[in-house]
Image (tube, rainbow, N blue to C red):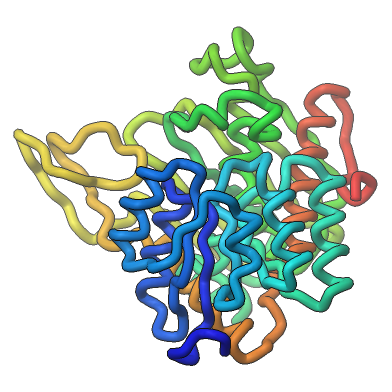
Amino acid sequence: MPTKSGKVGIGIVGAKFAGELHATSYARCADAEMVAACSNRPEELEEFTARFGIKKSYLDYRELVKDPEVDIVSICVPNFLHYEVAMAACEAGKHVVCEKPLATTIEHAREMVEAFEKKGLKLMYAEDWNFAPALVRAKQIVDEGAIGEILYIRAKESHNGSHSPFAQKLEYCGGGALLHLGCHPAAFVRYITGQEVVEVVASVTGGLDENLVHKGLEGEDFGVALLTLANGTRAVIEGNYVTQGGMDDCVEIYGTKGVVKVDLTFGSPISVYSSVGYSYVLEKADMSTGWTKPAVDEFYSLGYQTELAEFVRCVKEDLPVPQGARGIDGLMTLAIIKAAYQSAVEGRPVDPRDLV
């Protein structure tokens, strides 16, 4: 490998929330070495590289992707920049890990998938749910036949809203809660069933004054979609910004012979009562007094650590990217959400395959 240590060289573009998730997870991976980071904010970049022991700093991602020690570019910038950073990395011959969503438009996502396939490079879609230990175990149980044939899946991610300025306007983010949060259950439904979604019927709030809570948000703050898969399985996915008390992720899988229920975020084995509060409960929780269920290790339990370690292994050993985490999976997940938006506007079922 290009790094002197023989490890896979990582270049991280973005030094805020997603960048910190990736950096913390790479730091736990024995085969990864973070060699460079990029941000257009010098002070932020200096603090980030110092905290994670990254020696090289770039203010322009176009310079980072040319670094000969970088094997994988981790894209951790606002949604509207995913496409241009990925295409620059592809042109430079780099593999890419792209945060969700893959892009803000179907056209850009399709072009990304095609460009990486043409160059023989790996485009890895960072869908952490597929690597979360609880959901990995749930899939093993389902695959054993413990609940028979899957009939129906209900899955959601919700919290009280994004504070990023780039999440407020559609030109920067491409959608609201259903895109940012509902993308996880949408991707997981395809992954656990191995089936394509053939019909989407959806309802979303209208943005701005038509939202339930977030009147300054151009995208929806609540969205729900009924999915029909190719084999007839049904699924209901939800993403909302109207949930108080911290991020709430849950999955229910109903089969002909049983049921599996997973509580990803409130399933901690720890219970705490505090009258004065403490530093951190879980993502998006806004209070820590009274009874709480603090997260033990979200980098591991939500799948980030395992996900990025697997991507590093794929590059180091030249293995195929796992199903559910490929560029095409990111494209089809985006198509499901865009089909939901079209369904909500037009009041009819939409086949996401027609959008691709």
